[in-house]
Image (cartoon, rainbow, N blue to C red; front, top):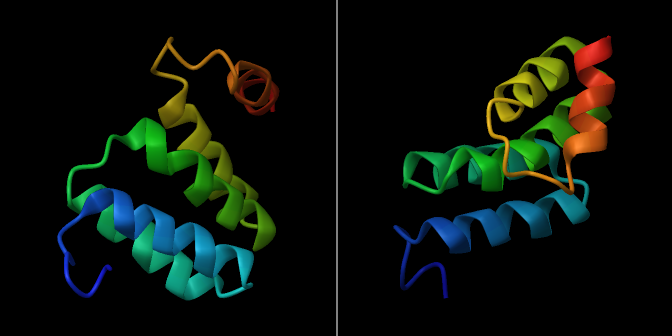
Length: 88
């Protein structure tokens, strides 16, 4: 489907999640970045990008991404995670 609609941000996010689940972190990161480039809101992509950073033990970048997410107040499900990383 993505071959037919390469400019679809949601499909690029889905591709990133599938690649991430397969352990293909570099490819997943590229797909997440592409989804953002195509206009998907940061609130939809940043949690997955932060998760990749955390798995690579790049805690500074994970924290930076989560701090960027902290700018949005409408993320009740992520609030405990954001609060944890904010305190670090």
